[in-house]
Length: 112
Image (tube, rainbow, N blue to C red; front, side, top):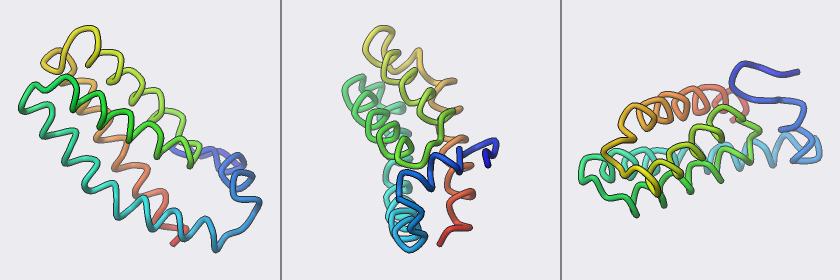
């Protein structure tokens, strides 16, 4: 089954169908995602290209574990923008990524 936010079939395959493992990594993501979002916002506010790249890379890698394809794609776009256009140019895309991370958080809460 695929939702708008997560590809649940791939997600379950990633953890070998182990719902306890999924619950544990979902809890870890929920804890880390607060800091992740704070780092994205802070890098954007400071217009710190390197910090934005690192925060977007962290977000992209984290959501990839959950087959959250839209969030992964947005993370990649923010990474690329941080490298090529700079943090100031990435504002709208970072806002989209932050919103998608919120959607991933909500989707993962059901597994905890």
